[in-house]
Image (tube, rainbow, N blue to C red; front, side):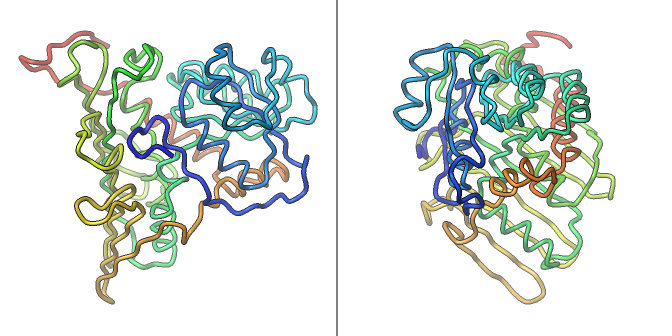
Length: 368
């Protein structure tokens, strides 16, 4: 697990096995453009899934993947994967703009789909996915990894469910990332392919807001984007923020950026602050700067006092097992499809409404 590179951050060893018998839940990987595919596969395998095949048109990506997962047979095409009746799910981290269309093909062939975020780059893609899920009854999962693969975030949700801070009325999220521009592919810098910063890494933030507040829906009030620093990539957005209000009255502000300095011991100091009527929680997901290099730090303050929890290896990440069982049993315990899709829509809405911040150093390079 590379703590310095968010694109290849792949947690491991946090998932409880729910399928013990080999062959019950076989899955394949198609599309290896983003390193999150490794975290996705780790979670599914640990939960009892059996990775049996992989396809990508790039032989170099394939070689790196099968070095990590030698049990995966190299398929010659998507169709070879689709035609295997034993494969129940396809996992993908291809180029974001292509994730929606791939998912439609997957479901058309009778298989469940698990894709990296952002799962879509347009609202039309989400509409098509909703219709295909309704038509087929299959699951369309999205890897919102900054909550689903974060033990401190999962524990925060458990505390909220137990009433530890009362009713949640406001959430603040920060999602800084290290850019590593020389190691990034060309599509990474073009919003036509990655969807824009609020659609991309902002998707983690919006999903966790809906989850922590228990909201079914929300409205984007304001959003902004900018290119403050990476002038050699004029379409790239290195900063974005937004304000939302949920259908239950809870409010949200989040900021995402690509400014993590090299001196930080991990790829991003991701945090979330959750204010309740009877207390508050701070989650430090990946590091406790200048104090503890371990992530999954949680601070709780309520009427009973102040508490600190270091949660690495103590909570687990139940989503993957629950998602496999949902695929096998036709349930929605891991995450409802409505929550999955509405979070995706809101990040696109935030992106589409965003104002480009124009400064002397950062001229307006395109208009909506």
